[in-house]
Structure formats: structure tokens, C-alpha cells
Length: 320
Image (cartoon, rainbow, N blue to C red; front, side):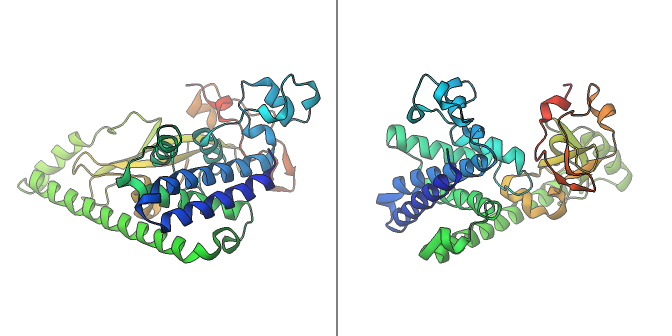
């Protein structure tokens, strides 16, 4: 449960993963499995650096006792402590570092599937090897910054391979996004190009009236493909440090007029469309049952940016 031990373990697993990756297809199963473990351990290193209890399985009381320094009271040894897995570790860190971590829950799914598939069944989707591998690299990079680990120390002699894989991934994402934008423009032209300006305006007002999603929150914006009204969709949270204010974090863009749908890596290529937005609603009006968090105490009352509550419990603020 020690952060330093987890950092060291992550580096060892990633070195093994990169070695396996360079050995070719026969070792790709090791590559995705080891990369998944490396990512999991670095996520846990960040959490354990805040407090060891944050990597413990919440329902296992003995494990919580060990993590909080009361192991003498536990009925099971520390070697049997139960910790969270990759998916839960990612969910917890993403909640704390949502602006820094580019990998959301959906993007992480192939990584978890590959890691578990190899570990439990000896199988994985060969077609997704490079996607899984580069997803792990992209997840780890911002964690290195947060943990103040020099990239050169972590990647070692494989740093050029890391850079090349990331570069290829970014290029592929941009190409894929440009393809989606071109297709969306063509669809828009086919659907509405024959209509007169006034008639088109009336039709589009009907077509784009509602957001095509059931996510927690949506916000209308201009479609980058066709210029019609599109929708950003995501979730919200309370930001206490500069507020309290309601902050909207978009994850998906969709346009009913041209069928453009962008999320995950491609979404980040849309420029400021992916930025968080401060909503004008007060927390009381937005959530209805919201009350200030009594646990929020700034580290320095003269410096509100110095915050002892790095991630207030959002569930307290939500009435829905």
C-alpha cells in the first residue's frame, strides 16, 4: 500500500510490457497484460500517496484497518489485504484529475478487457493490441507529471518508442476525426442542400431541438461540421475552491442535423469544445437540495487556490 513501492512496481511492469511489445505478435499478450498492470499500479500509487485507504476495497474492514494504521486490530494479515482493481482505481483518480487524465471509462474498457482476458483466459483481441497499449501510455503520462516522476526515468531506453506510438495515435485520431467531419458535411448537404434558406431553418430547428442522449447534463453549441445547433453532453460537479460554482465537463458532442458523433480521443481534437464550462446556475438552483460541504476547509484562507479538499464528495451536492 506504499506509493513508492507501487511506483517502482509500475515501472518494472511497463519495462516488461515494452520489451514484450518489441518482440512482436507472439508476445503481444504479455505486452497488453503487463501494460495494464503498470497502469493500475501507477493509478494506485497516486491514490496511496494521498492516503493508503484510497486503494482499499471499501467493504473489507480488515483491509481498511491495515490501511489506516490499525493493523493490530485486524483479524487477517496485511498480506491478505484486498485492494481495488484497475477499473475502480481509474474511476477514483479520474474523479480527482478529470482535467489531466485523457482516458475516460469508455476508453479504458479495452485495456481492462485485454488485461483480464490474458490473466484469466489467455486470450485477447489481437486487432486492438496497439490501441490498448497506447491507451496505457496516454493514461500513464499525466500520472508521471502528478507524481513528479521524470519521464526519462520511467520509460528508460524505450522513450523513443513511447514517443512514436503516441505520435502515431494522435495522427490516427486526427485523420479519423477529419473523416467524420467530411462525412457529416456530406450528409448535411444531401439532407438539406435542396431546401430554401427559410425552409431549412424551420426543419433544422425541429431536428436539433433535443440533445440525442440521456447523460446527466447537456449544453447546446455550434456543430463544427455543419454549423447547426449541436449538443455537448457530460456531467457536472460542484467546485468549492472558487465558488461554490457548478462546473460542466463535456465528454461527447453530437449533432442530429448531420449525424456527427465525437467522443474519447477525437473529442479532445475539437479544441475548446472539450473545455469545462462554469454554469451560471447557483448550486442551490441547479441541484435543488444542495448544501455547502461542512468539510471544506481551505489550507490558506488568504489563498483560496490552496485547497485541503482536493476532491469534495460530489454525492453530497446532488439531489438527483
